[in-house]
Length: 366
Image 1 (cartoon, rainbow, N blue to C red):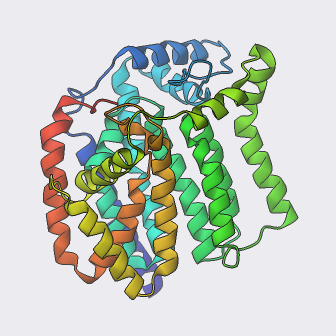
Image 2 (cartoon, rainbow, N blue to C red; image 1 turned 60 degrees about the vertical axis):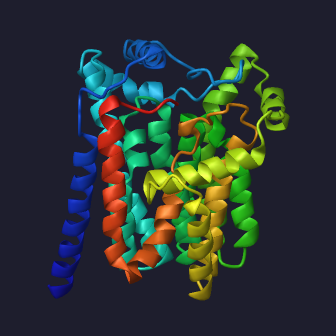
């Protein structure tokens, strides 16, 4: 009975954090809904699906001939139908879905560190300005945040807890990610890097698990295979062309710009090179605390998420390519804050400042 009461009290605390996330994501709703060309195009396609129109390809990517997966058309379709095409409905749903990430972040941090760190990480996710921006953005990257978190939750279960169920969650997160955002194909080499580096730590899959997980991923990529057969898109050469394209912008400039954004939009809004000192001291402190596996885990998480920006020739790198990437930073700093919880108030003030400054205007340029 005492154990049950303890679990219930902890779940109440987590649910309160979820409510904080909901409140912050619904601030200025519905006045901060942005419904532009992309949103109208996808709404039209989704309503077509609701009326029986079968879609094998999703919206176009920035590369001519490449398309995202069509799954989110099918997820949006019943919402648009229920709300008679009113974008307020889909905007509300996306804000709630993003807030659900509180629970995924809790378990990632719990498996990597401890329960106290997990509560702090979930709270940081709830108040994150960057995550509120993803939540109010009516487009597929909003869903990509959750699928990426599922991917890393599966990895955390496998590496830090040796739980075989992690393979199924990883496969689900990978499959959904490939559907929601084409750039998340980067998760495939990231997965290979994790398997190589943490080979001795990972719970090895059984033949049954390999078959089921392969089936899950194959199910989600089947739309791409069917589209290739029907439309002869020849997407594979296009993928290699994108990967080998050269940027006119310094890769180092983009790399540092994204690291700075992660720091300012999630930790402290200080427009100086302070972020470099922050990363160095955080990683050094964790290394001295013998949290090397956790540091490596989050380093791969962050660096893998930044890779799509290295060849980006835009002087203002796309905000919404880094779905769920900065959450790794929130998980990592949660352990540090568990030793110095008074610093959380500074992070709260910084994020609330950015939320009230920008979220009333809608989502930032993508």
